[in-house]
Image (cartoon, rainbow, N blue to C red; front, top):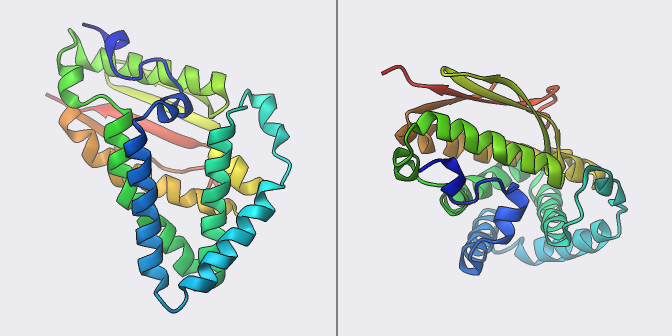
Length: 231
């Protein structure tokens, strides 16, 4: 068996997310709203709901046609990002900047594992490949190519060796959408979600995840570095 037989091989993350079982997305949405509501508190919940609806309506009218230049035309993905941005905007207005971002990071942390498990093959799947590390590198580079094709990210491969795989993202649809909607800080929670799940999630694969910077945090790129553990 090689990487081509693994779940979601060669698919962009947008395509893979659209093909997830509906129950997974319902669970993610339910968890997100529950975490946000708990953090906002009962007294502030009515105001939060009104602000969210107002912001979603306002942001839905923002021109995001620039995404087509990158090949991103998926209306479901764009709609979900508008809702995510509206959620952060409402949290920020009700809780304040720092507390609002903290709540959004908690939402990301609470949902990251469900998404990771639904989108990504398990360690046992890679273990069935004749060369698991080569299969992992092939899998990640194929998905990076698909992401670039579908306008989710623009990736470049800085290293692809027996020691490490480094993929640098120089354009991120999540960040660009949030920036266009006036809440670029919202994307920091996505970065945080990566860092919650990837170090622990990749440990069974024998892979160490490292990151120095992201676009959302003001860096020139998002660096995804995967290092093979020494035997």
